[in-house]
Image (cartoon, rainbow, N blue to C red; front, side, top):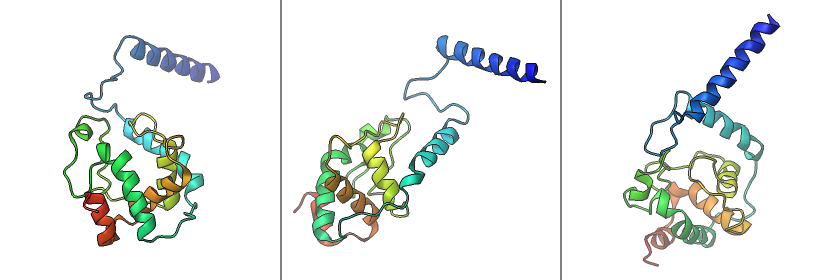
Length: 166
């Protein structure tokens, strides 16, 4: 029985190596997902962020904080995730997996603050989402976190900043 288990493991490992080494592993963003790829990626992501789910922002939720988040979003996020009240950018259409339109159809308001902050800080491997830990200071990462968390209740002043009319 142990020999069968070891043999099965070896066959799977060698088969996986041959699959990848012979160019059958799709690496182009235009290629579709492998079977179970999305499931495995989501399982790994949920396991990675679970320790940060209870994190809470040290910043107050007010117009000053959210306007700061709007500035961060427009300068760092809109190129992939789309600008406020705008269609998804062409860049997003050519990414795999496609990034969510954070201030449009794909609001993140139900996600815990800690999860949003973790994703902004650490990025998400194999999605094109960069880690902003070395790009944005902690304060600006929390500002954009709160902007996304409260995207469904933005004041007119924050909306003006997002639209570039402020």
